[in-house]
Length: 382
Image (cartoon, rainbow, N blue to C red; front, side, top):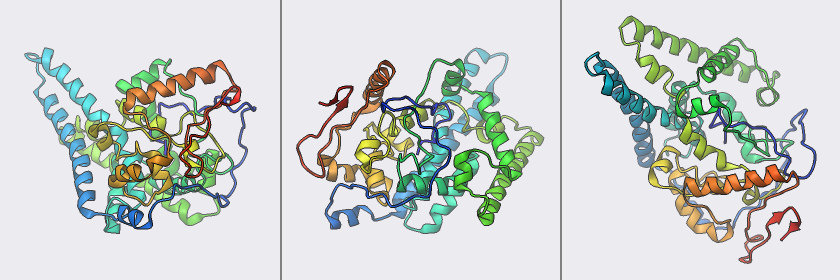
């Protein structure tokens, strides 16, 4: 599920020891015989129970925080004057930073959970809030529905999964990356609007987009085009209303409120599959879990438990910690906190850069055995 962060560069390290594969086409997903940690059926059945109450709590608080920080930013802006600019302007930037921090989680992260139809027990509520989040964040939820279903069936299998292409490379050397992470990169915003414009006019480019939204599926293409038009017309009407009523600053906090300060989304999202392995039918080899404090977990809809989510995607986000406890004996050790997680990732990055033949394999039991398996390095199994 990365799609979480436009700042992450998805290019390839040659850490498999073979030449980088350039895909010319994706194939239809065949059956992948995934290994899943055995779990007591009654326990799993209990964990899969959905709850409208838990869904409402998460959704109302999540949306409420976004609109509360938007309101705070708006009223802070209204207080700015020549007499107080020296404290009101810095305060505005602080509030906008806080508001923007939740922005990445208003897009495909929230939409992802709702698309699994596990947030609410009442099914239509999942669809309603999926579209609401998609509108707020200018997200292409129709493409993502199709793409993410394939991603789950064939996670990180290069012939089938174009949503996450391993290996992944990222760079923090470019100043525009930092601009998007800590402030606002207008180029990224303009690119998003242009993409929506192209889709509204029926122009779909890119190999994965073409695969997920085939030209032969006229009905799907029509729905996709209609949604893009809803985004353009809806946001344009809102922006015009904000300007006409003298509330133009609402464009900053609402129309473009999910387009800046993406640092936390980047830190949470990139670990999901970074440095791991393609074409292995075992989620423990291609998906990472980390643990963290309650606030990032709330923002992130508990997707730090990403390995558990891939193994049993029908378990609602609020039960993923319980699922982890039930099967953790069969999983790799999870780093705690973003600092430890990124320390692990950066160490891997240095090894990939130093040795193109380096391969990393997490340590985990083989099919439920409690003995450790292997860690693959430049000299093979150690």
